[in-house]
Image (tube, rainbow, N blue to C red; front, side, top):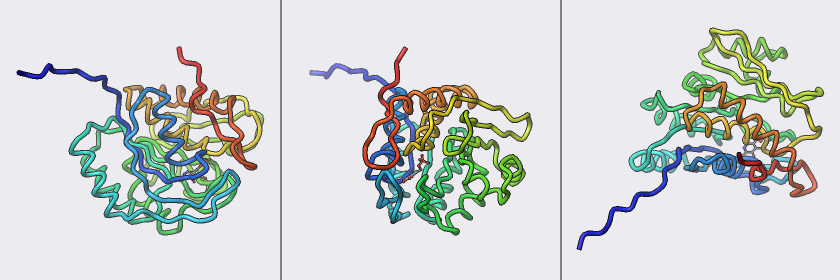
Length: 267
Ligand code: PLP
């Protein structure tokens, strides 16, 4: 007897390469939750493990780059990938593997969150990793999403706009300068592009630091791009999503609160 063909639901599948934060606030858990809450299916590949609580990062160890290469090849042979999101990458060898993988996938939106430091000040990238991201990864990204500190460091200029322009001149297609970890009454996210004036989005700042807000924003942008939104529409939707998650933030430990990625009112 022939078995009946069953058809299953499909969701855009978002490949996530990022690190583990055992407090569950940032890193791969934030990415998985954001992507899932926004109706996409995460394909999570772990790049590094951190020693971390809601206050800070105290240590980090990268996963073997060769193991990551095998995971990427294995996944890609089986599943369609609608968008890729990267976060903390562990070391430069992981960037090399990622760049090789991405090279033949030019049409897949790539959202790169160039994670360098935790909000508590702990290091998540060494010089070699920063050099590799700047030299090889950024030019392949649809957008990179540095926070203010990361942007100044990457663009080697205390002025964020000048830093962004330097990164564009060096080959980045788009730089979203995120203001979540900054000061000021409003959180201002600014999209810098090569061929257009900068575009800004503002939301009132609730105050305080939120563990994993940058990860959540970048993952939500990837979910939007994976669902077919333009970059600008995906940024607007992601910002609304993060804002709502922050409005319902959870107290997990004694440090920063954690955005609640499942409290969003769904329409
Ligand atoms: N990724 C990992 C693995 C982390 O541990 C952290 C921060 O602590 C981040 C990313 C960045 O977090 P945020 O979104 O708060 O900038």
